[in-house]
Image (tube, rainbow, N blue to C red; front, side, top):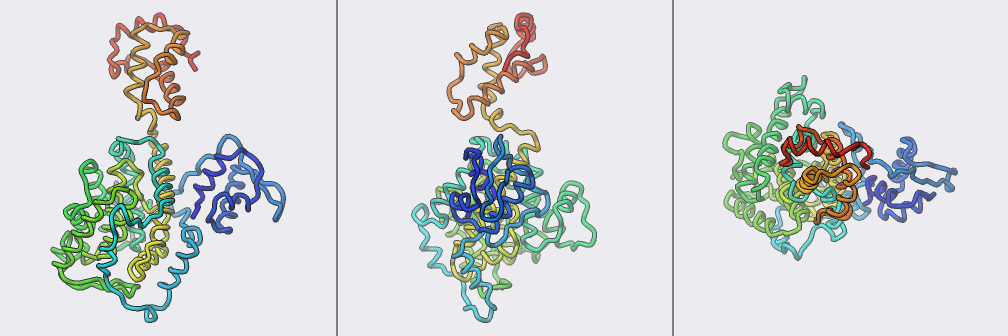
Length: 460
């Protein structure tokens, strides 16, 4: 289902022409009328769209330049409504698990259903969903720099993922309370110790993921470590990090997880072996999210473990992490119950995709907030080499533009060429004795070049 980000993308790729809401809806595809009307009103109120006419004659067009992406609020500014997240078919499935629990049939873990999944042949996410996720998740040119990106915005990732994952478990800490606890160690007044421990445990688990970003794989050791870090002091002594040997119940559902430590261990290992064979990063991520929750191999904290495990394939392969931004708790729980009781993956898949779009938008905003320039970082060595050559050849301001065009490095993506050239010119204009050491330029070379360079402010 299309979301507000899809609307902005669509409008930015159109000529600024007048269009009716029905024309826009037709172009976007699956979007609720109510949601579309709300988004259009918001964009008009924020002076991002123009509106003319009334009632059925109302038309809209974007202002130029292209629409900026509005920043996500730090508190739940946009928790998605059911009709915004789910298709009509999924809404019907959700109605089934909303019926009184005594009217729904008891079910348990269906091993045959899990075994029927064939990695790289069976797909839970549709081709269209996977294509959209790949395009959005890697649209920023961060190839080969996942660790750099994640570590650069680590504090924001730590806050957002801890807050959202804990919130989905009913934790009542606000995002401000979460930040204060994580970085100042100050607990919010009037909150239970269990809520404080839940957030602090998320911090340790996320630190583990980031610290081992280059080597992590979702195997038994990794998942049990995640569970240990998330469950420590929240479950009985000795239970954290260990497959359970006792029966458990899951509230709000007719689903009864299997029992038996040996059987659960075997099923966990088999399921993770299957997951690691999946080549598509998003399919693997979603498989982990659904099936770690479904198996319920641990005495508690299974869904939290699944939410952190599902980001491993993404951050390991340079994709934006899934942060579960703006996911409604009730929508999440009902989608999970559809997975448990009906073995229907569609509602959870749609929620996963919707939330990932929100996570991508939020990720971009955080990179902008910390001043991280992905294109500048991607081509840093080429930029510095070109600037150093300008200095060594003692080129004047008038000679530099022609030289840059003639010596333009290979390997710069076509869509990045203009930005790269601007970065080089800015580097040249602001070059000083502090910057030259990183480029292998001596002070004598720099001073000799400055004597002949002339007025660099004319470079554009």
